[in-house]
Every structure is written in C-alpha cells, then in structure tokens.
Length: 460
Ligand SMILES: Nc1nc2c(ncn2[C@@H]2O[C@H](COP(=O)(O)OP(=O)(O)OP(=O)(O)O)[C@@H](O)[C@H]2O)c(=O)[nH]1
Ligand SMILES: [Mg+2]
Image (cartoon, rainbow, N blue to C red; front, side, top):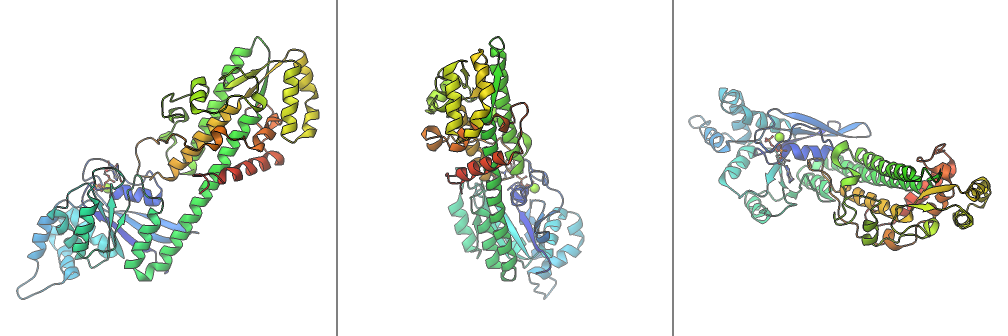
C-alpha cells in the first residue's frame, strides 16, 4: 500500500485515547493527558514509519460525551419516506448546522473516523457497561468503518473485562484486544495489529511489517541496554585510585560519589534509549532490596541482606561491608593486585604493575570498588531494563522496579570480564587518563554484554 493506513482513536472521554497514542508511538510528549475529562479538544495525528516510509497514521480525537443525544438526533435525520444508512446519516449530520454547534466535538470524531480506514475504540474497562457506551458504538458504527475495541485499564484490579467482552460480542464486535497503555502486555502491540489485520485484509502486509519492525527495534534496544550496563560494570571494576593515608576519608567519599554518579548516568542513558523522560527514574530511588534500605549501594546492611558475597577476588580482606574497600599497602596487597591481574588473564599488564607495586611498598594505598557493589549494580540495572521494557509511554508515575529475584549475580562467580577489567585501570571512565576507546576494552564490554544476554529478562 502506498498510502499509510489511517486509524482513528475514538471513544468516551477520559478513557485513555491520548494515552494509547503515547504508548503506540513511544512518544511521552504526544498530546495532553489528564485525569480530567475533555482534555483533547482537536484531532491530532502521529505517524509510525519503518525505514523512512510512513506505514500507519494514528489520529487522536476528542472524547465523546453525549452519544445518547446524538443518536436521538440521528434518528430524526431521515426525511419523510427516507431510510438512510449509517454513512449517509453521518454525512447528512456532518453537513448540517448542528455539527458546527451543539455537536461540534462529536462531529470532529465522526469526520475523522469517516476519513480513516478503521477506528480503535478505547474502553475504560473499570466502567460498568452502560447504555451510553452502546449508543456511542452505534453512532460510531454509522461511519461504516471497522472498529477494534481496545480494553484499557486491564492491568490493575477492579476492572470488568468479562462483562465488556460479553457486551461487545453481543454487539457483533468479535475482534477485540486488551491493551493497558500504562502497562501493556509484552506482545500487546503485536496482538493489536494482528487483530486489526483481521478487520482490514488489504492492510495485512503493512501491519505485518510494523510488527516485524517493532520486534527488531525491541531486540536492538535490549542489546544496547546490555552494552550500557556492561560499560557501567567495566568502569566500576577497572576503577582504582591511588590515595595517601591522610586523604583516605575524602577519597573514599569521592569514589563512592563517583560510582553513584556513574550509575545515575547509566540510568539516564537507559531512559533515553527507551524514550522515557530524564526524571522518570533516579538510581537512588530504585530499591536494591524490597525498598527496605532503599538507597545506597554502599550500605553494608544492604549488601548483607541481599546475600551478595562480600569480599572475594580483589576485594578479599576488605573491611566487611565497606563497599569501597581499603587495600592496605604492603606485600599482601601487592600480591593481591598481581593475582587479580593474572586472574584477568593479562600477564603483560602485570608487568605494568611494577611501578604501582613499588608505590605500595612505600605505603601508598589504592581504592577499588568491591565485588559486592558490582553485583548490586548489575542486579539493579537489569531490573531497571526489565521495568522499562514493560512500561508504556503513557505512564506518568516514576519507574518502579521489582526486587531482583535472579540469583546468579548475587552468588555466582563474577564474569571473567570484570576480573580482567580489574587489571586495567585505564579502562575506567572514573580514572584519570582513562582510555575508553581501547579495542581491548570495547571487546570486553561486548563480551560482558553478550553474557548479560544469556540471563532472564535482559536476555529476551
Ligand atoms: N492506570 C492507568 N491509567 C491510565 C491508563 N490510560 C489512561 N490512564 C489515565 O487516565 C486519564 C485519562 O487519560 P487520557 O489519555 O487523557 O484520556 P483521553 O481518552 O485522551 O481523554 P480526553 O481527551 O479527555 O477524552 C489520565 O489520568 C491517564 O493517566 C491506563 O492504561 N492505566
Ligand atoms: Mg485525550
């Protein structure tokens, strides 16, 4: 089809029409959404394109308010001895003066639906099935276009989906979809377009292209999200900062702050990737553990309760629970650092350690980020991706994430990529003189990202 498929989003006022458009277009700024009725006053369109070709045009319309009166008015439109069909009646109404006065808003809706290939009829499934909705459907059916009922508000409690399904079937509307625009089902868009294809056979290919493209886009987003998380983890694992004994408290504070900011930067990059608003999530507000400790990566109690192993690897001997562990200078530390370099499989870098080890003999200290913190970062960021993947662009509340359930990052062996990073301070954006463009770093990020893809949620 050369022309894009045109769809009018119609329905009673305040049922979530504009919200549905936001979610289908992944545009949080589309139109105006409000809990008050009659928010949308004009028809507004948006396009869905694939490879630069517009496939679908969606039109938001004002909500219907008084379909009962309009239907009564319709019944009086037939002249003596006349029997108009639906579209003829609608046309006569649109040409009359009432369409510019009393029924101005309704006229905008019907005019748009007449100009479209089909309508998405949005329903607030929490509402009882009242006569006014049946009248509304009758008025809309008069346009002679296929209507696909979309059951909104079905993700929460207290909806009446069963009654609606039955009522719609009785009205002859057998293709229906459930699609909560704040929390859409994972395959929600696909089902919506597939149902539409049943009603619009000529548009089948177009809709299939859209479905295929959506799937590809989603996989691409997940792949990019895994890269972002892997970059965060490598930055934190590779970070080491030399510090004198006197400067220790400030340096500890500064490194913790740097890690928190680095995590927040990852959160913001993920929000941007998923096209949500920058303020939709703050790392510090996302629970690490049932929201109980709520906040901090460096809270020893969080680490303990989450059951992540404190210590291990380079952080062995860390003061229990101190997220940033203090490695004391001396032979032990020297050996630990060397062992880490070897474990990371970078023998040649171990040579580069000469100067740093020497420094330690002189009593110099070095701060690194504990394994336990890496585990928390990995858990939390993966939960965030899961939440963003399932979030509709109509959502107005802040992102909430579930408590991580997945055990691998809590208890399992840390990925070798992180041990490798330990031996490459220049891989960390948190270190001065960082070389983020080193091919070996890039490769390690890729490998870590690939490992994340094997995990539930982020791997889908
Ligand atoms: N929880 C939840 N809230 C929703 C959902 N869809 C819409 N809302 C809320 O319902 C209210 C109305 O949403 P709108 O998208 O403005 O509704 P509308 O049908 O465009 O309204 P009018 O333009 O006034 O006819 C807003 O407060 C939305 O945030 C949903 O699926 N779940
Ligand atoms: Mg609206």
